[in-house]
Length: 244
Ligand SMILES: Nc1nc2c(ncn2[C@@H]2O[C@H](COP(=O)(O)OP(=O)(O)OP(=O)(O)O)[C@@H](O)[C@H]2O)c(=O)[nH]1
Ligand SMILES: [Mg+2]
Image 1 (cartoon, helix red, strand yellow):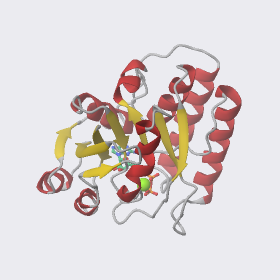
Image 2 (image 1 turned 90 degrees about the horizontal axis):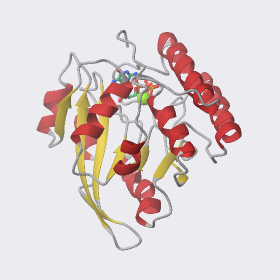
Image 3 (image 1 turned 90 degrees about the vertical axis):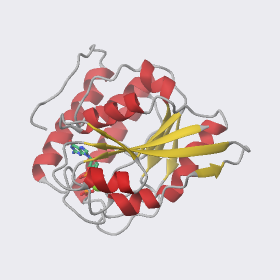
Image 4 (image 1 turned 30 degrees about the vertical axis):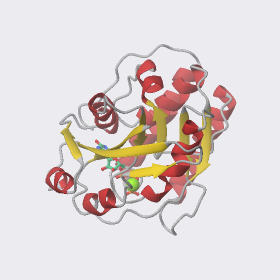
């Protein structure tokens, strides 16, 4: 199984080297399938050494100057055209690459095409502020209700079959991207499985979402908007916001 770990990164120079170093190059999954893993860092207009450090650590690096988590992820999907399975992982060290096998096992066993890493494992104290916990609970509750999917978290750390992702015609190019993937996969009838993952505080550098008021408000607006809009069946067009 060819797997690419896509890391969208905006000014993560203090974390990227260590994080890439922790990603295993190949692993044996329980069903005797070998996963060969490569790392692709999408540099989202960083003003620090993120790209150079990622390259020096052996990752493939692409640049997406349009600012936005969704733009960065979408550029990664386009570039990872040899992969069968894509894993998305934040670039700040908050997710543990040692848990990659947990995300891949259900896909290898043909039990899932989208595996969501729910932050219900070992949570480092202070890693998830109360407002983020509340928002996650609220939106995943809405998703259970509107889409009938068994989810408990928005799960930025996740694995998906590339073919499924391409068929979803992703439109949200900022904070709404991960939510759009979940609700469209649900509508598509994809097999969605959740596994518990750990969550740590970012190793260093500045928060872009949960740790800032602006990031939190914007994320809430987009995430709730996507959950409700797709839930009530309105058809989307490409949504971006040049400021983010
Ligand atoms: N929000 C945002 N994140 C981006 C962008 N481009 C890349 N990223 C990456 O998306 C990941 C998540 O952002 P974080 O700043 O860690 O958000 P968070 O986890 O809510 O905040 P922390 O509590 O500081 O970890 C990181 O790897 C960022 O570097 C972008 O344009 N906007
Ligand atoms: Mg983070």
